[in-house]
Image 1 (cartoon, rainbow, N blue to C red):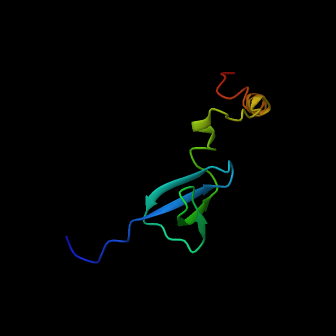
Image 2: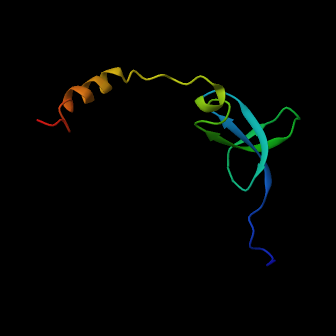
Image 3: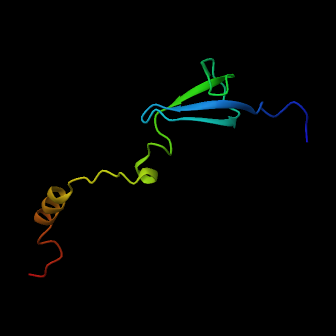
Length: 85
């Protein structure tokens, strides 16, 4: 392998803005913002909009959209389509 071509792999905190959950992990991502972690050390932090802690697929709290109106409009619009006269 070539030397000095790979990014630095450091410990970093990801902060989920939707749920407030924080994850300490390792990544090549960089940030100028820092946060003090539970162990007393200071780590860079990256704010994310959504993660496994707040994503509906992983939490099981999916929103059910009212699509009945859409289906009814579609059926009404194309009710005679393909019918033989």
